Amino acid sequence: MIELINISKTFNRGKPNEVNALHSIDLYVEIGEFLVIVGSNGSGKSTLLNVISGNIKPSSGTIALDGRDVTDRTDYQRSRYIARVFQNPLSGTAPDLSILDNFRLASLRTHGKGLTIGINEGFKYEVMEKLSLLEMGLEHKINQPMGTLSGGQRQAVTLLMGVMANCKILLLDEPTAALDPRSADIVMKMADKLTHDFNLTTVLITHNLKDAHTYGNRIIQMAEGRIINDVNEANKAKLAPTDLFGWFV
Ligand code: ADP
Ligand code: MG
Image 1 (cartoon, rainbow, N blue to C red):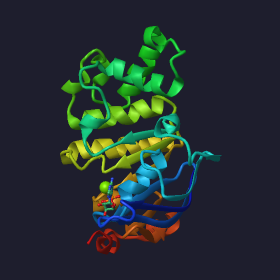
Image 2: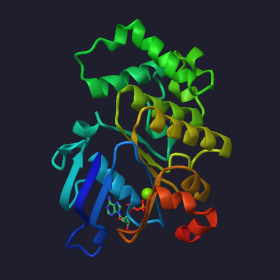
Image 3: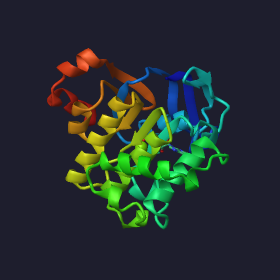
Image 4: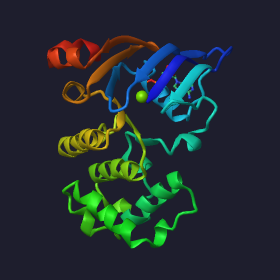
């Protein structure tokens, strides 16, 4: 589903502040895989996600999504495949618009403007049905402004919006770092459930050792722009949390 071939990224090439953020990365992520990425600050994790989403253009290399070469496609053109959740719950949604209107926007973004989602009752009920999965009672608050929700609720709703818009890939960059433990738990469980229920391909960056151990069927460690460890499902299942401890320091 995600294929990176020989991807490198240099920021500020030729200048004193030149940084080689990614070095010849080869990575293949299969449909339905839930990949966890860990690594110290500055190791290139976010840059890698931004290269997948198209927010950053690699200096060299090729990227394919769902079998199609998208190297020269913009982030906007890739957005029909990709849902993203960032660290900051404020960045994924429009706070002044209602929950329902946020879902409408997300669907328009990926389906194009020709659709009549805006006046479709069926769409409203689909949103309510999806929201009830969260068990937060939000299906009764669809006309409430998004900005009135807690950070955890917003992150969970952002995940659902991506799924409803038929995105196939979930990119999660420390989605729970700004949340209290209970909200973080709900968001992670929802990401896991959606990945399984909709056979999504999910990439999670986390600094949380417990989440890295609990979730995902593959884990990679990055350091200085390289993948220095890659553990598959069978071997990940054998890891104890303490085995991962060294990966976080
Ligand atoms: P991580 O997410 O693992 O903490 P990043 O991918 O954000 O790491 O950063 C990798 C390296 O690239 C760091 O040295 C960082 O300072 C640098 N970097 C990231 N984005 C930019 C940018 N837009 N301009 C210049 N340097 C950048
Ligand atoms: Mg980062």
